[in-house]
Image 1 (tube, rainbow, N blue to C red):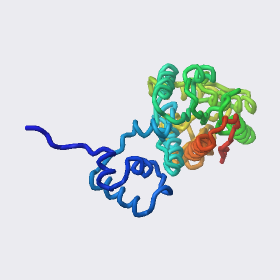
Image 2 (cartoon, rainbow, N blue to C red):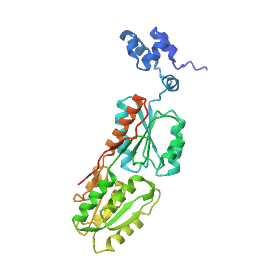
Image 3 (cartoon, rainbow, N blue to C red):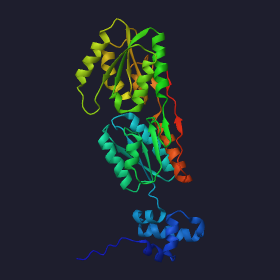
Image 4 (cartoon, rainbow, N blue to C red):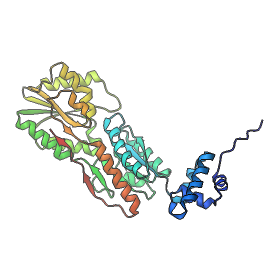
Length: 328
């Protein structure tokens, strides 16, 4: 039996509304100033009655815009990525764009594939928390679309950047603990060489402390028990008062609670600090002093820069916008 169901097209809408297809197209693209309210009303009624869904590919050919912005984040296992995406989406959606989050999973090769996918598809712009160098991004992104770097300040970048004051915040926190009698620091971090923000935080610690150990944790695979035992070994190796300094919130949440429960973190002989993205870290031990950064605001600021770049259609600047983290 033949299926009589028929998907409505733009000609069907025009016929039912008694207008031209050009008028329907103007309605769909928001150009309501070129028609009367009565005409716009008839087109809307026709679209609703026919349950017409516009062909996005055809509209992109006409408008040269998909209204889609790609956000490539480093790792969705981190609360930072979720909050960053919320901030990006809040601004994009209020300006008629939709954000799409892509996860590089802390993998350089995967990030390159995602950049290539953004280049190949009809995204209007790219916001990226990069591992890749400027040269790599430039070589892959051959289309002329706005790019905004977020979270990781990248020297000589030709695009706007929205970042945290990583070096200053880490140095301020370290200085505070040194002044309060803590001399030994254990830096708990993912691969230091992989990301500029980690290196800047580490530099800030070294600028104020002399006795510093580093414990790197693989983001792809690690043995929780082994890391826990290494932390205990480092905590007990010195008679000096010790600070575990986590360079990301994920490691604070992953490893500090057990140390608090077992009495190793008592805020007298040893304490912990680090960069926190949510209120959850502060619940671990209320007396701990942390560095609060605002990934939502970082994302919103990056999206504002993106929308501004798209609306002006001018050459992007290389401005660096600082969203400061606060220690306390």
